[in-house]
Image 1: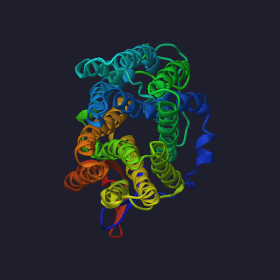
Image 2 (image 1 turned 180 degrees about the vertical axis):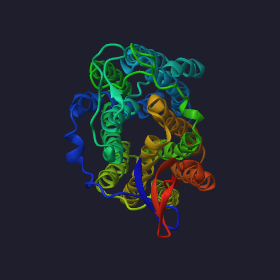
Image 3 (image 1 turned 135 degrees about the vertical axis):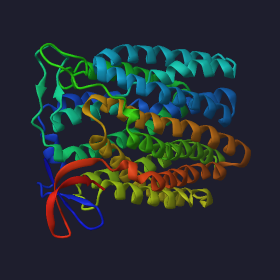
Image 4 (image 1 turned 120 degrees about the vertical axis):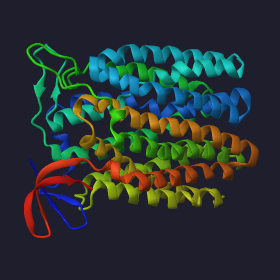
Length: 451
């Protein structure tokens, strides 16, 4: 049983534990065996959308068309990623990842060839579908591995192999792991867009996507080779019964988080297109990568801080505060017209993303059983991609018709709608735990709502 102290407002404060920290986290046995290849394998994810936008805009001359093709990729990923996560939970990460990276490499190659051949827009849409559907979900897979080694979930090559083991990790480090993963994600978003933009503008318009395909293939296969730390599957193994399979989307809290993560996707997509359009408007395309890098750096810095803090308020409240701050920061983007001011405001927006993103992923640990966590993480990642796809499309159309300033309205609207959704449905984000609680000076056992 867990032991919690509940105040009269209903917040649950965990019992005293050693202060979380990245040093403790990174000393977890086996962590580095999946962290290093995982970092290499997720790098291309940050290059895909901007690479498509820059290539298709070059060949068609339209941000609207470029955004639409990128949007099809994002929608396809959002629809297929959870299915890949479900298959990974059932059959193992390697079984899904190896064919996935091969298909993705071939699909990106086909999209590049078609774009350079001036294929009709509908043909690019068709090519974008398998490109998005096959995006390897490295981030969710790494998060599932953290959950396995920290939370005591079985890990190993597969059922019946005898190689799996039960982790003795410290479950109190799960929020720190979520923060670490957010920092890692955002570090890739510091490097990825800058690298893709530099390759597309300095080498060839297709160079960014070519690099994305090569890195996906090499990094994905290297990550798939790390079989010792992958979570065991949900299938029935020899000599024992597996945990019953549950769809992650059947958990109400996961549905609420997925909807709210659409707002985070709207920030990423809206910023990518609008910053690109802004750089074109001022006649300095190269500044796009710098501006987006500053935005992503803010997210990364905030993530570092979040993971090092021993929070005294519950995750639901942190989520509300994070989204409120994000909405407020995004509200001024459309009115800024200078590079220094836009860089500063972009940094502030980035600083506000990490708390919301990290807290959402942390809540999954308490809402979803281990047998469905990879699927749950991919629903959230897919929701970000779907929000990004919609934002890229709308922001592209607005930038074509009214300029970059209009495109910056997209992050504001997306985050505001997500905040309203969270406020209305916040009760569904409270996992029920049973433990000994203290309320109004009385000690007894009762269900506790963790806020």
